[in-house]
Image 1 (cartoon, helix red, strand yellow):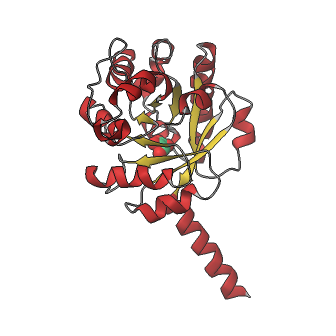
Image 2 (spheres, protein in one colour; image 1 turned 120 degrees about the vertical axis):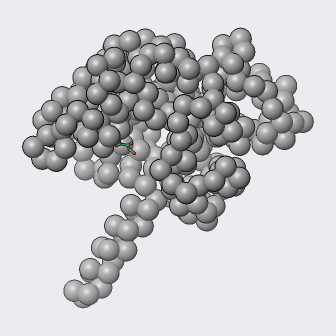
Amino acid sequence: MYDFRKKCVSLDRLIGTFCAIPHPVAVEVAAASGVDFLCIDWEHSQIGRERLEDLVRAADVHKVPAMVRVPGHTPEWIAAALDAGASGVLVPRVSTAEQARMAVMACRHPPVGARGVGPGRAAGYGYRIPDYLKSANDVLTVAIQVETAEGLANIDDIVQVDGVDVIFIGPGDLSVSIDAMGPAGQDKLNAAIIRIAAAARAAHKAVGIFRPSADDVGKWSKHGISFYMLASDTMFLGAGLAAGAASARSA
Ligand code: 3PY
């Protein structure tokens, strides 16, 4: 098991990407790229539960921690991702401190939380359960995604929740939720991101964000953001092919 949590809370700059292509080959290619982590996107993809485990396993080929963005707050989904061997979860659309607390409860075994003990891949399919239980609560990352107007309004309470390791900002959803889409909304959106990042850092939480490209990572790092989800496998595939085709046409 990787100590992904230690890396996240170290505040070293971590670079990952979303993996939405439901095939282990795509994950293996992404894992070989030199990224610090991958996030299997179970929320916005056609990935099924059975396939999820193969995708986490594919990241292991290159010893890259794979977290999973779960489809929602259901504890069974969080348990399924962690049982498959994920190094942590990214829980979307967390808008209240109570939802953040429930996410922590679902990720941590007793006495900290309420996650069940099972013979999944993470625990050697059953034969390493005692070893797994010794370290799981300490090494798995709990990241929650703040991406709604309600989450922004409640941010000072959300960041106080013990056991949350990373406050992850979803600028796309946030821009829609606070009516700050497009160039006209950019200043409003930036102010919201800065507000969330400042509250999280004041509470000693690591801060993450989705960025479609690396262009402004330097700028956001100055606001204490250390955890970057850079685009996705499908976005890199499309952009790479489009650029290659354009330069081949003009050659
Ligand atoms: C957002 O930007 O809203 C995201 O959820 C990133 O995937």
